Image (cartoon, rainbow, N blue to C red; front, side, top):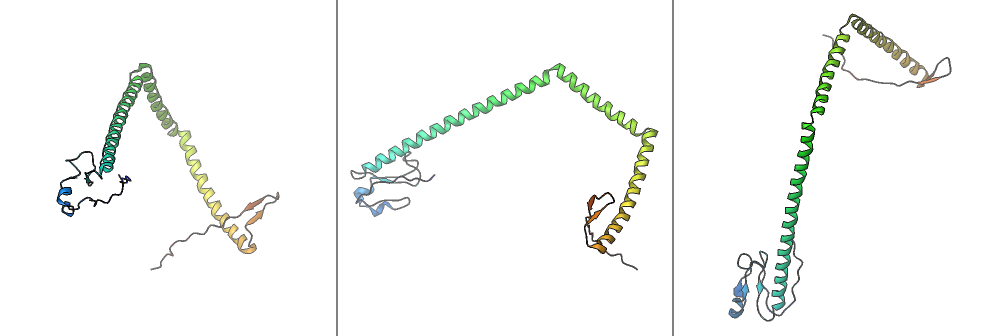
Length: 193
């Protein structure tokens, strides 16, 4: 925490944290109040000279100490309030969680849902393994392979068309235009042994 408190200027020599009291005349050296445990109103590192000329400084230090104590009390009060509210939030959440956990009708419905999910998965698996489904899966696989071959051939023709015309658009018999997308791939060249 930075302290922006300014003390009035006097003709008296000033002491800062860590400075020697021997720099003052002997009579004034005894009037130095150290900071820390011996003077709880001052923050660590501050020393104040006491005397008639320094009465304002002492008053400012006392005011600083009172303000700091007040601030600490406010912090503690709000920290305690925050802890209490956190505890209440936890209690309310637990109460709500218990409402769900202790509702027998809800538990029955959740159990039924789990059972229905299991039944649906089992039914799907039976359909998937049926002769008709197996036949359709095989047909789908064959059609995908045929489509792959057609698309490979079409790619070659489109590339040839692009090389001949330089155009990335082709028009069909009905006058509809389609865009040609050129997709280049890089692979390692096969080494011959």
